[in-house]
Image (cartoon, rainbow, N blue to C red; front, side, top):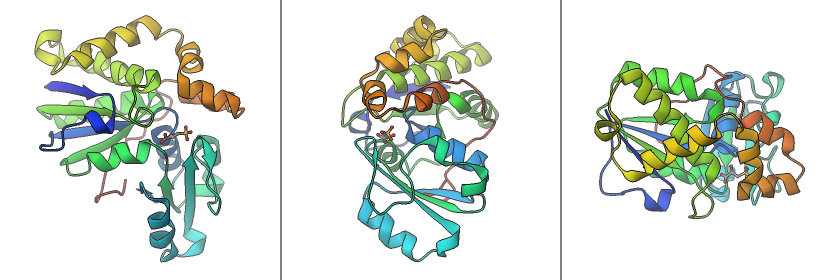
Length: 241
Ligand code: 3SL
């Protein structure tokens, strides 16, 4: 197995696909998606364009749809919710489809949607995703971090490092055989340095600070609670997990 990490959708190659591609947006899109599916949502459908989300979801029965829209950390007007995992309670999402558009996370998923296996990972479902990859045994795996509007993000990189750390331990591969690019070695080092204080790292991260200014500290705490969900969001058809 060879792993490649890309820090943003913009840095991700567009002329080829790996056997398995994983989108990561710890704060907060992939954490919210994993939480919604774990709470019984029928599916999560992702959109980069909010108007398209509104149009497509209109054709869905109103009592079986939830529209989640986020821009700049805040809820988009006209949507039922923003992008907080705390909005995804079983009472609210069970058997409904979550139509979601966020600033960066949904773009990361869209840029890998042609890969044969597409997954969404966060810290909260890290081990479930790792176990699934180990079962599938893909030769090439990409982790695509969402970043923030084209820039590197600490929270996604540490999650990529946590996935890489667990994969390398389970496969017994040497780092030189396993790492497809330098980003893998950098992400593992970041994870090893911060694994015991992930909340502090979230609070230092620029998007963590943006969410703190919106009083979302509880979201930061939840999103760095490693391996609490045994759910693997897998793409069933392009854009639908
Ligand atoms: O950038 C994104 O896709 C979002 O996850 C950002 S936020 O955490 O909802 O503000």
